[in-house]
Length: 295
Image (cartoon, rainbow, N blue to C red; front, side, top):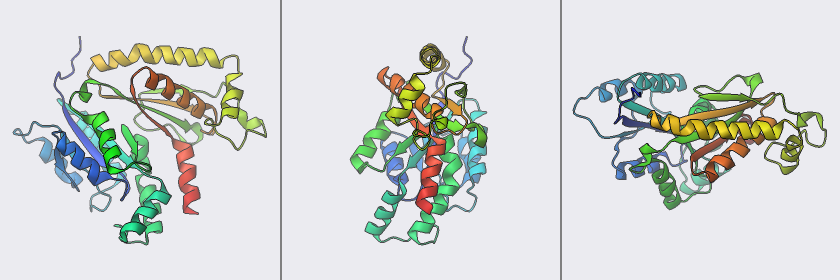
């Protein structure tokens, strides 16, 4: 028998780099019935949640410019809320490609909020927010979205009734860089044939067809993929019945570039086709893109 609160209060922390659409997302959440507060000092969250008169779901904008901001403080706040009865904390991360952020700052002729030239400020902020991006329960990439498309994305995840659905985060990572934080399920892909040892595939990723085809030829791959899919379909309704609003599934391999990426891509397609809300990210590939953009 479930001991979960039948009507948990949804508390969404909203963050992301300047220019990615955080304020726009908060306005959408406010229109959806959330009590919205932007630029929320982290130290005030406990007092806010202890207010017995409050009952609406909440959307709290977390800005790196705040004096008490740190990734550790945000992680701690999420952990503390998760331990409180009657609350369902979530982290919404608004992401955006570096070149798009640069263009947006150029078009508006704004200085970067961190006080740097836009290129330097964007790089510094993305590095600062990296751990939160990896921890996010819902990640929306706004690089190719206009304001209307962003609204539709936010509504898809957070509109009335969406709390009765389970959002799934699927990601890949490298064991050399350690396990991702706050992951519910981890699958080790290092037993599969490694495309790294094939010179023509070494520089590719699991998103490339040639790499995916190489991994698919491993006689153990099809069985592994099927068992993971079956397990996910069996577990997800159970987690939903237990009152969870999000679940994180991660695949790891040696470098986080080939096998884990291919498996994450495959499960993302499978669960999406099965009707589940899925957020996909590749930790090491994203890290490499940020490093290349900063050079």
